[in-house]
Image (tube, one colour):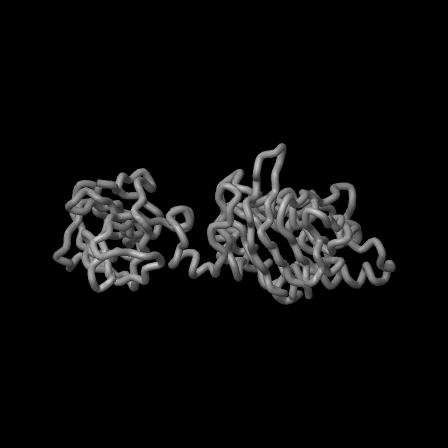
Length: 357
């Protein structure tokens, strides 16, 4: 199995820079996901890896083979890449068997029939060879699209928003199922998505892209718990920034107490910093003597997401089971449960909060 290496890749469109020195690597059999807002460059990166968009600077390798650089461009059809798109791209006039056979042009009929049977069993749709795409649900069509992409046994699979046309619950369930299928086949894969739950369900490594730059490429756990900068922290999960100052013990003094931290940058005692506080860092506790004002709340079915105000006016968020029905304007008891604080250089604004002096 080949692995993917993207080395300081830059791309432009109409002389406008779209990708800025992208670096990432996928080991053989590893699954990666790219997350980011619309127009950030995720799909352009996928197209560049597939050979549909040229490289201005940098290099792309599939295994040991250089497939893209300023001087080298291996055509898409020679890269042994499978692709799955958000619109499934199944041929409506072909039955399911013929759709899958389309990716097996060089195989004999007997080989095609055997591979199709194997793939339909793999994706959980045995016996539907003679049906047509319009006779299947959206989730079933996407499984067939996956089977067609896997038919020629590609070295790497690229997926562009493959579950976006499905409802939320089906998306996450299908993402987990597709992960199991790819792992069973040993396929290296890279997926673009807007849905972080989908990415976390699928990926070994997640990349956050913004304005053409890859801000962080890491495990889902580290992306959430150790974001590299405020944009990553803002984009992944929920949370608020509050102001703190560095103490001599290298901890951080804040309005919610002295917090332990692993400082990722040079600081001086007394220096002001921004501290990320996520809702799961603040635990609702009716027995706590520390009471905060509820300034807003959002009902989420099983829980409420409360926005709370500190004495200095800064805001925090806290999740609580929905039977704790505290109205806006009341006070609730809370306590801090934070293993270590995530600290950034002082930012002027984030999530609409002004946290400067």
